[in-house]
Image (cartoon, rainbow, N blue to C red):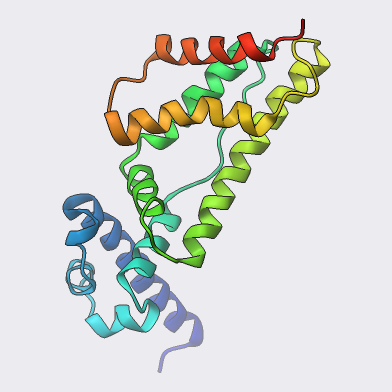
Length: 192
């Protein structure tokens, strides 16, 4: 007879295996190529085990990606706004460049109504807004920028070109490119 904890571990192992298989299937075949049956087969479980936990492919993929993505982004503290923004933007690019992040971004751009996906999008955006807020608050304290700087606009200004290159154009994002973006932003926000 199995104990509740042994049964729970078995359930967690099945869940973890299915989520890992879903990410692998997504990365190998793309969203359209993923099926509940292919994920179940890759995880070595019965299809009904998957349907018991996830009713749709979209729910399964969303949970799988959420399980593999950490929304946190390191907040730099170099003592200089430009260096902090370059490092923050580099950290963003690095976090977006993983196959899981790219898949999550593509899924988030699809016309799907998934509460957990919206929750994840909000959590990631909030974490990045918090990081930008800390960097800008420090710059205000040092007198580098005016306190009235619109944090969300500054964040969007730095993020949009990175997202565009990662998802659409696939153009290179290097140190010179990031530095140029940061310099454009700083031209608009520096204390005069």
